[in-house]
Length: 186
Image (tube, rainbow, N blue to C red; front, side, top):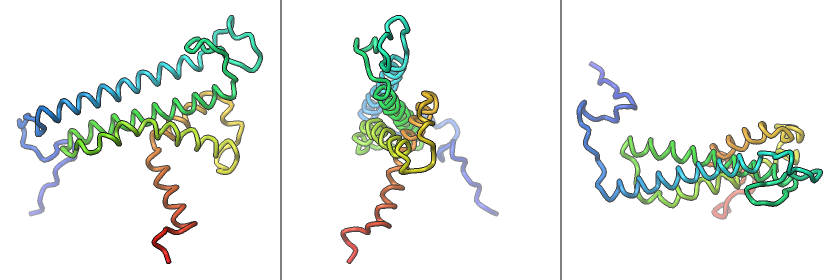
């Protein structure tokens, strides 16, 4: 008789086993990180919405968008890249939150990845921004440069680049190893 496969969602526990596998100290850390990541998500979304919301009565300078958040005019070209980075930050924060709740539920959460969880949204913002630069420049000929003129395309790609930034960095690492080798190669 074949052994029954345990579904992923029940993590191998007996029905009714509701007690936590984590001690109070771990839960304090988990809750702190959750609050921080949730704050990241809310703050980045707020900044994103404020940075792309035009106020026609205040937007009187050609080629500039007035940012009520900062009280200054920002060149539309710069505002576009700020929005892309913020969308990447949001994507990274969403990925981070998803990873966190899966790791806690599956019993693989550990305190040693704290730094990784805190840094992911910032890395995601930078990966998103520079991946956007590569696409817009034509170096990666996947999109036309004009694609980023539409703010919704820009934000969508920013989010996706941010969400999958770990995969993008791993792919770049593999590409660099194939193209240039490593220090260990003779």
